[in-house]
Image 1 (cartoon, helix red, strand yellow):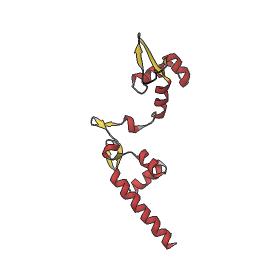
Image 2 (cartoon, helix red, strand yellow):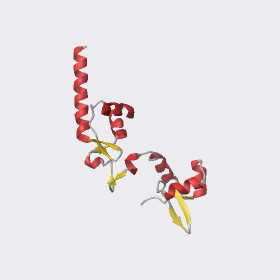
Image 3 (tube, rainbow, N blue to C red):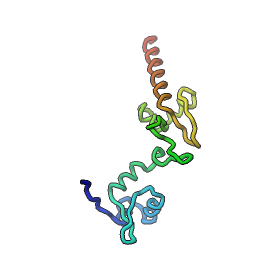
Image 4 (cartoon, helix red, strand yellow):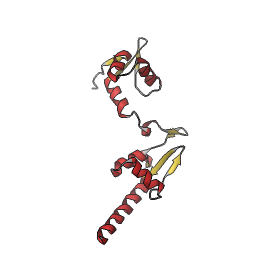
Length: 137
């Protein structure tokens, strides 16, 4: 059975987050921070605040184009950030691969979408290039 969450009001949440109550209300109104309404008061919990901070600047969760999510890993659609994490490099490095044409992307609105197959192709080619350099050295 799921444990009951300890609900905290907006004022206490503002103290925990180190911001004003208007900011917390704004986050709840924008649906960035989960909350429930009980007796005409808004409540949140520590778990939801932690979840907000984890996904604070995540385009993967909030990006919608033409009514559906832009980055859908089930369909093999990845963001620049996801590819950077998988390759173990910085996002600027992935953008460099894109601008030099080594990594192909498609656009959805202003988002860059990288197909899983394209990432696999890129990884295999990069490994071949690294092996060739090692043999010639």
